[in-house]
Structure formats: structure tokens, C-alpha cells
Image 1 (tube, rainbow, N blue to C red):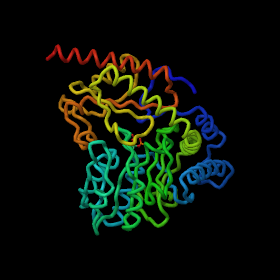
Image 2 (tube, helix red, strand yellow):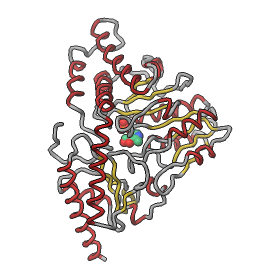
Image 3 (cartoon, rainbow, N blue to C red):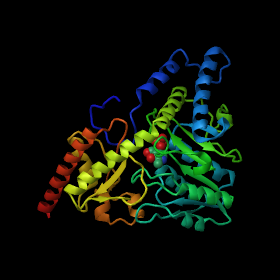
Image 4 (cartoon, rainbow, N blue to C red):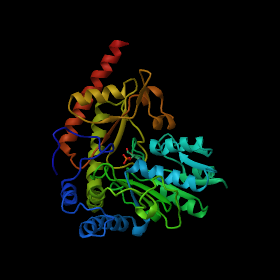
Length: 387
Ligand code: PLP
């Protein structure tokens, strides 16, 4: 694998496009760059590229090609799923979501509330896990849909989606699930893990940015967000992102083919990083430590420190990681996810998320661990001096 010049440990934010993916996309910028709607040879060549990606995704997820709508990414897929369902129901009824959803689900719920829908947000436990029983207890006769993500982007905690999918099928309730962080990192089967609507994105698994998909059960009808030329069977108008869709299919196949080996490699690296840091700094807290997590994700905190300052100091040392906190009115606030988990504010503010990927190796992780330990120690002694 190509090594990045800057140690990049933020793969849950986005991933570099894999060289094989770039290579597969290139002809679709030139000799195969027709409009997929055109009947001539150039158009047919483009259409073939899209059909191939649709077949690849269908085979991976266990669905028919007609169940896949290509979109501009996870955000659009989540918006299309929830707005599309809500609009079909005349913006009436209830939407049950978890309290740890990505903003592209959570903010849609807030927008739907303004349209008159009732929203119930179910909190996770202190490990970041959503209880399937609590979700189903919130479902009532007026519930239009349930939305719970497959795994959280900040903590990496995997949710009991199989159980929720099953319970939703029994209650004849539509289940939407955001699988953006899970696709390519964990085995994913549409009917086992969802059964209703599943949101995907290409740029988290070595594909290009700005392309994703919404996969849906054949029985479901959605009101489109985009009207126009009737592409994607009238469910998402607009000339398809040809190169992006081609890249998405190739990236998905590569990620899924290499999944088992890669994920056991990454979980060993992730655990070794956690062990090194905890050994050197026993006060280290790993969020969602006892939960089942994505192999590549580690969210840590040190009460009293500031996550944003940690991220900036690590950046100066050459490492890219992210914090879950947001700065409002000059004060760093813990992430919504940690708040929902009931994490103490002083600890929540200090969170950083490390997310490994294809270019992470033992040497990089060891050097990063040493730098992180140095930075945490420096900032801790500075905060003591400052009182
Ligand atoms: N859902 C989750 C869980 C995510 O982590 C992200 C991206 O960070 C999204 C949705 C949005 O995906 P996209 O960037 O493709 O719009």
C-alpha cells in the first residue's frame, strides 16, 4: 500500500482513494465519458460502468439491482430515506431515532419536526450502545420509521441492528439504518442488518467523495428529493456521477474482499495503541471500551484536557486525528454523542478519535503512541501550572 507523507489517522472522516479505484475511474473521464442516458455507443459504455457498480453492490448486500439508488453520498442518502418516507406519509406520525445519529439523520429529524412530525430520540447506555428494547418501546401505532445507525462514527460502537431489524419486521415498521461507517469494515447484509432502507457512502472505504447509495426494500416507495430527468427510476433525478459510481463499485469490492484480514490487522494495531497509551497514562479513558467496536476506531479522553488543543498539537507534530468536540462561544463542548452517553463534561471535552486505515502500520502506530503520550503529558503539566 502507498504510504501517505503525513501520518493520517482519521479514516472515519474520509479515506484516500485507492490507486486501483483511480485507475478504474480514469477511462470514464475520457473515452467512456458519455451520458449514461444516451443511446449511442459512448452513452452505452457509460451505462455499462454504472450497471457494473450496481451489480457489485447488489451482490455484496444481497439485493436486486433495482433496489439501489445512487446518490451524492451518505448525507443525501439519509435525507432521501427520511424525508422521502415522511413526505409519503404527509409529514404525519412519529420518527424514532437513536440519540447518537450522525447530523445527517439527527438534523433531518429536527427539520421534520418543524413540518409537524413527532420525533423520539432514544439515548444510548454509558458504553454508547442503543438498547433494541428501548427503541421498540418507543414505537407506537403512528410510527412511520425507526432510524438507528449500524455503528457510531465517533466511538466506533456497533449497534444491535440485527435485533432492531428483526423487531421492526415483526411490528411492520420501516427500519432505516446509516451504514456509512460500517460498509467495507464489517460484513453487511441488507436483509439481516436492515431490511428497510440502508445508507452508504463511497469515501469511507477507499472510494471517491460525493457518491453514495440508498438501498431499499422493493415494497417501499419514497417521495424524491430531486425532480428532473427521471434517472435512478425516477427516484433521484440528475445525470449520474459516472466516475464516482464506477469508483464506488471498485472500492466496495476491494474493501469487502480484503475485509477479514484487514479488520483483524487493524484491531490488533488499535488494541496495541490503546494498551501503550493506557500503560503510560493510567487515567486514559477509552469511550465505549467494553462495547463491540469497529476494528479501526479508538476514542480516548483525559479529564481536564481540551480535545481541540490535543488535535492541534498532534497536527503540529504531523499527525491527523480528530476531536468530537465543537467550539461554541469560545468554550469547547463535548460531542452530542458523549453527552448522550452521560460522559462527564470535563472528560467529554477532551475526546480525540483515532481511526486507522489501509496505510496504518505497526511503526506508524508506535510512533503515534509515543507522540500522543508526550502531548498528553505536556498539556497535563501545562494545565496544572495554569491552575
Ligand atoms: N453518516 C455517518 C455515520 C458518517 O460518518 C458520515 C460522514 O462522516 C455521513 C453519514 C455523511 O456521509 P457523506 O460524507 O458521504 O455525506
